[in-house]
Length: 209
Image (cartoon, rainbow, N blue to C red; front, side, top):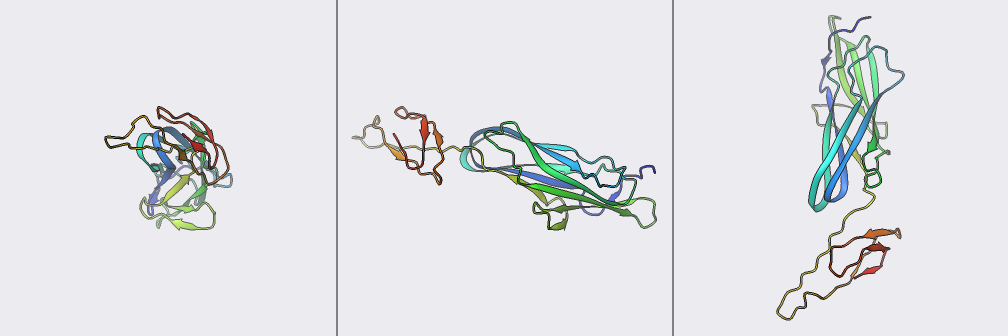
């Protein structure tokens, strides 16, 4: 059977992938790659589905917080030879600096393109649905507001510490001590721009001068 013309879409034919990096501070240069994989049980003959996508961070953040970027998955170029449900798994599969910005392998989403005949049997009508990361909630897209959210805490973060000395009797060369309290007993690497500070490895409760 030959391909019919591009279907009429009932609702949106695209969806948004959103990537978050928690505790973002300083310069971030990292690209995340996403793979869109067709289910082996899909009806045969579909073409035009997206297969890959990427989100690139190349920014500097002066205030620590959550950095967010997005990209769009566009299914509008798809053509079909049969009615049915066409299922695609969306997963984050690569990070250019995975040791610092690990891949979010915990969240895999499912997009479903549901195809049916139009009223006069001359073409198809398609609808885009999504199953959430738990696989138990099916929602039809309304516009382009629905998102695949990927987020994982970086392997390390930045802590900015400053100390202001003022007054005529103040000693601008005096060194001060700080206690870094982490939520676990894991080791953390401390780097500093202080003239009297020393980089090194600190653990929960250690004191650095």
